[in-house]
Image 1 (cartoon, each protein chain N blue to C red):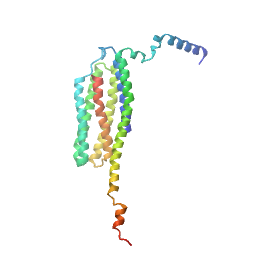
Image 2: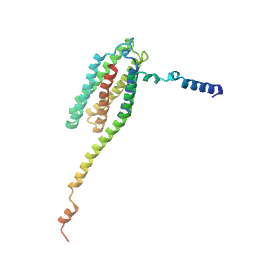
Image 3: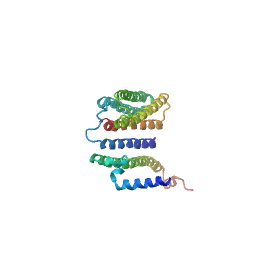
Image 4: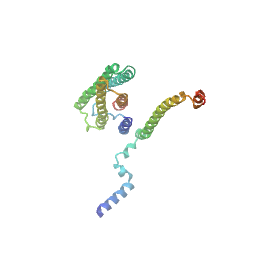
Length: 94
Length: 172
């Protein structure tokens, strides 16, 4: 960046920060101008914050539910097997 | 498919939130813009009904596939596909009418949001109908697996369930 450009940028920054109305070049700066708009910003920020967390929670909940279902069958199969003591009791002693 | 649906939900949430913020920034009574056509809310209710019915048809198809096999589910799957295609065709007709009335992508903020949001949904609907058609062909040949059916179901249910939210927010 050449020196005059740098100076111009600095002057523009100082002027725009000193006079807030000039800084409203930003596309969203004027959107908070009324109550409806402010509420919309708040609501949509909440939506975009909570939605991915809710989706993750739902996915984890579903996985936990599936895992519980699978593990329940797993343990039932092992429970149905005779215990070692029962097998030993039925075996003829030498 | 779950991860894909997750990203799609976030995509539509982004569209939705930007639309709501822009809509609320407009002063009371100035939306839709006075020089722009009104969106056909009543006529689109019929399209909405067709889409919701296609979701019900796919639900029945899924249940019948799991209980009675492919042959029992086949007509329901075809019905879901037909109703989905009817929805897309009716939406296309509606777009032609709106374009003729002067609502274009660059005519106003309403036009930009309408074509981007509803267009993105239509694109998803077309892709999901193609997925349904492939699943239906596999089902007809008795080659459709449970996991493939679940993937197609998830995609179509997403397309069906996101629509009422868009309809309520964009058309009203």
